[in-house]
Image (cartoon, rainbow, N blue to C red):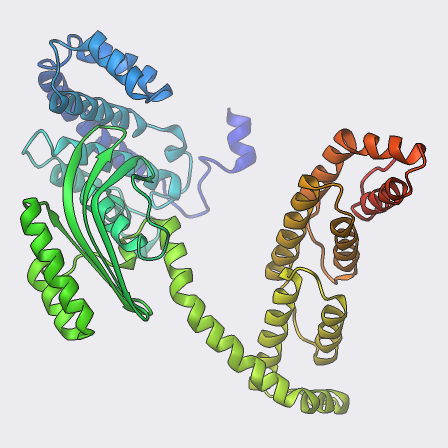
Length: 485
């Protein structure tokens, strides 16, 4: 272990950095663990025959969270026949104990500072345990934990101490059923609506969902049930998600009222939306939901990026079009200045770089591939001495090749696909940057094992088309740097 730590730098500390934060952090976690253990034992005793035995056997649930297996586990450990609400309470208590153990994950202690991602993750486990505890006990466990955590000082002044780190990173990462409802509402404006819909470890079942659009303005109204697959807790919410275009997006969520009240509210807001009076729409939503509490920032990270792509794409398209026009109108002047050895003005150089990279990306993604167009653009790149965005271009070329290779694997008799593959791989080999080819190589090798012998047999029997296929397939393999023979 000491040798491993020495090699990876773990536990050694940076020069001048103190490791004194570990002691206060450990004391804060120990105090929290003791309080949680005492309360867990008292509360779980009314639900579970042996709270600690159930905690130890909870590993069986972690390995298989199917409803059948969880029910079997609860029947075996229940102190009496549990209601649905009591099942959820028991699962919450067991999850609380799981996170109390995860607080001591070893990687959180090997590194240089309390602000490191590993140590922040340890504190997030504590935050989740505290969040679950709030459903059972009123005492201020979080306040006591933060007071102790404030004694763990970061080596980086901008992070302060453990309390500031908790408020900055851990608290915003807390997930509630209401936050899941808001995530569902906002993301539903930008992707196909499904029912029920999985949102990570939550299930969202829409009792009613309405999506209205007028140009770039979108509105979603819904009455939904959000359920946790981990703790079985469930709540009903009504929501409105309103997108004005660009980054102007808001979502209001509140607990369900009766169905008739929801129908009346949805009808009223839909009628206002139909008028196109944006200020009145906003006022109507504020009257029903109050000031919206959720925005794009409230989304979970993966869907946040998806939504931002939808928001940014029109702006990026407009920007690309503007740069293309500048470049195309002044391409001859750019060449003239280059021939004279005169540096391009920054605006012209930026336009050329943006435009040529954008046009190259689109051509590399296009199918069928226009080789002459790509070569012409590459000539312009060299003439204008443009820096290529190699990461983006490599990705575009690779994705297009992999897609075409999958199509060929599904339809190996298609000689046209084989010819287009040879053309595309040949062009890729001529590019001034490397393209990762391992996936097309794997597809080629798989076809070599599965379909190649059949074509080889037909070629040996005098089938000229099969003979041409074998030769082209071998040529493709050589282009992919595969071992053909």
